[in-house]
Image 1 (cartoon, rainbow, N blue to C red):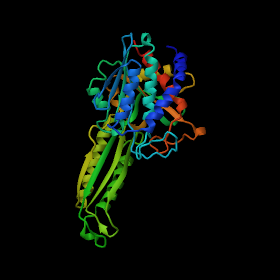
Image 2: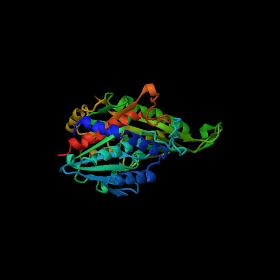
Image 3: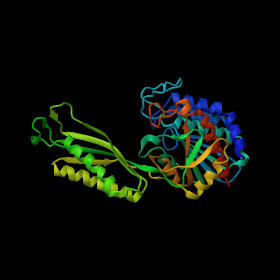
Image 4: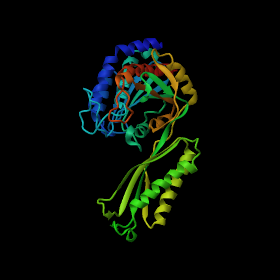
Length: 391
């Protein structure tokens, strides 16, 4: 397939892709609750004559299978879940569900893969088997949606796997990727400090969990500044502390939560060990008890196969109107990492920033949106990769 021909077909169905994206955007669903989105996906794929499996891995996982005439097997993935964010975009197709929003672009991912399915279903002579993975619960951060779908067999026999993610940091239509680590392992933690409450005027009679928590937060920053190589990508953020009810009451306990991001498994192991030691030592020094919990099944580092990604970048350069860049690693996490543990492939960012249109807000913002002009670039990229990596 020539890139120009695919791009022309993508332009012909651009209106449909935008319509699908807006329908999904209006009706966002949280992780593991993507029932209406899954129904829309299944119905649309069946209208194209594509084989569909529902309830794959979880109740809302959907797998479409296009059986082309070549021998290779390529998987393309889109995630479907939204975030617990109240939308403030003012768009005519804004979320109809208070407190739930497609603030990370998964609506666009799903629509682009449906667009790619539309084109691929017309060219069976030019592709092998293409598996369309519509995955729930990417935002879960633990077991997620990828692992259950993999356990259900979606990656069995797959030669290559590819995924696109819209990114506000790049201009609209730009495609950005890199070989090697591209996204971090996101460890989530919860620390409970259990002290002994009392009157605010008599702190010496208490074991103050608020003061102890402040000491812990400060000490944890020493991991970044004194224990990790300054050239090594690493983030530790305490993002939530909850304690107390009134100004003159020292509470019994405090709870803090946050995230640790690493791109290196050895660094991760060292950091988690040091984290535990610091928290427990400070609590012991001040006579408090502590409970440290890390979310199980944290996503692995997302690692693109270097040789495959080099070839991907050369292929993507053929797309009209698109620009290809090498991206630095991003400290966000992704359970697409699990697919890349099962087959060679690449995770690719699609820029959707357009300052002239006021589309400037970052992913996860309540004002986040995408430049829909970029969607045809994403559709073209998915189709082109499915074609070129079919043997």
